[in-house]
Every structure is written in C-alpha cells, then in structure tokens.
Length: 396
Image: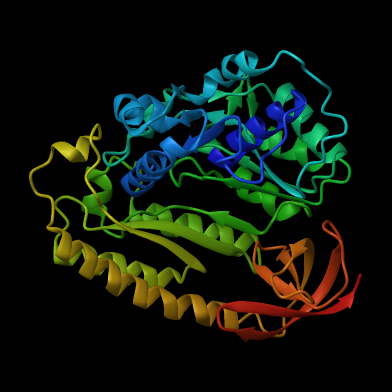
C-alpha cells in the first residue's frame, strides 16, 4: 500500500513540474512515507528522520506513523506531519502550477489500491485503528487509473488492500473488478494482495483459474497453525477451513504458487501451539513464508495481555521456523527446474547481461537475453543458483 501511495506522491510532484534531487541534502524538501504495520518499521523511520533532520531544508512526514506518533516525529525534526490522505493539501502549498501527466512515464509494474481500511480487528494488529473502516474505491476510479498507467507503459498491476476480498461497491464485487481489469488491452499480468482466508470464496479462485493474465499466485496469510491461537487472534477461520481453501486452490490452478504470513511467539503461545504451526508448514509446503516474531504494539489488543513470551523464546521459535521453511522453499524452487513458463521482463539485473523477469506464478526468473521491460518470453527453467532461478529462452 505504501508503494502505491508513494507512486501517487511522485506523480503529483511531477505534475507540479518538480523533479527529484540527486541527494536529499540538495533537495528543497524531502517527503518520508512511513508504515506502522510493524514496530521495527516505525523505529527505523524515526531513527532515519532524526539522523537527517538537520541536513535537509524541509522534512515532510506522511503515512500511518504521522497519525500514530506525531509528537515523536516533530521532536525527531519533522517540519510537516500529515496523514497520506491529506497529500493534496501539502502539494498545493508547494506549487499551484498543475501540469498534465501525459508525458510522465510509469513503471512496468504498479500497485493500485482498491480498498482502504480494515474491519477485521485481529488482536495483534493496529491497522484498523490507523486506517479506519473498509472503504472501497469506485470501480470507475480504479479502472481509469489502471487505463492511465497502461497508456503510460505499465504492463503489470497489483490490486491492493488490507483485505482485497472485502471489496464491494454498490453491489459490484471483487470478482467483478477482477474480470473487468483482466479485459484491459495491453495489461499482461494482474495480481492482488492481501487475501484473508475467511473471505476468500470459490468465485475468486475460479476466476483466477479461467483468466490467462491473472497470475497463478496467491498470498494467503495463515498466521498460526494453532486453532486456539487463531481464535484468540480473532482471525475468523480454523486450520481445517484453511486446509480446504488450499486444496481448492491447488485443485483449480495447477502449478499455483502460494505464500503466507506466520507470526510466532504470540501472547499465550505454548510449545504445543508452536509445534502445530511447524506441523502445518511441513504439511502445506508453502512456496515462501514471511515470518515474524510477535512484538507488542501499543494500541493493539494483544498489547494489553500479560502472558507475552520473553524475547529470547520468541526468537528461538522464529529461528526454528525459518530453518524449516528455508528447506521447503529451496525444494519448491528445485521442483521448477525443467518447467516451461511465460515470463515478463521487469528490468536489467545487476549483472549486465542478465534481465530480471517475473513468471506466470510470480516467481522471479533471471534470463540472458537482450530485452526491454514488458517483453514476454517463453522460458524453460534451467538451473537454481543460490536462491535464484535461471531460465533459457525458448521463444518470444
């Protein structure tokens, strides 16, 4: 979501005939877009702001941290602190010379928010308190934005929301939006993030299976393998329901790539709960898992609990989970060797002769082929080096 907000800021600045400085010390002003999903991100942002505040002319801080820790930001040296939905006001104070975006190129891949806010109120999360209730953006506004991006060079769109499945606008559903986006000419790949297991229905899975330009990739956070903890987290599903969703996805979409989020060391997590999480990771065999150790968040319900595990135990459990999943991830990548897939070129890789591409399942693949961003190739996955897949171009 923050990438999308940052893109909007960047384009707004460009419309006002403002250009990026080579260094923040030389800039007339610096905008810092912040995130509060994790405490670590907050602390890093505050630390950076404090370290550079006396080296810039004007420092503007936007994003969730601007709402959550405004006074600390000002003490750290921020000149203007504004939540992101007030960005138009900030820019209007900088320049009124609004220009057309017609000549502003867009990146090959872009994120487009479709839902803001969340109404799930998971016990560990502060997003609903910061971003407010679910608000679905008008389909006309979404489709106009995507058409504009495609007209300026974007070929990959990721639809964003704290929970995209909650999208609904006057009877127009998320599936309706998916189908309409998929019909946009020149749009080659579509994905969406994040999907809540309790709200993922068969119509979404079936639409993915039937639509060629929707990536065969889904991020489906499970958070824990313990039904007891899932209930205390107010997640709204059981491990059995989650398993059924996974079976439906894999039966409907061959070669689908599935990733998830898992948090360990939650308040009240016993050794048996943690072992249940390890067990379900071994059973489902996710392609990748984004893993975190619980950290108390001021403003969340879990922050009020007294049975928080000490930090050393949280880190021990996280380390065990990382080691288990690392082996599975590498095995899943090795399984792709010999497979043929369509890839789209994103950019030149750090190694000059290689190009970074994304496969139809969202897998990063390196190819050795002169190309331009947006080019499509059919490749055969030839080798796994380190953690990177390499592909031999067959056609395209």
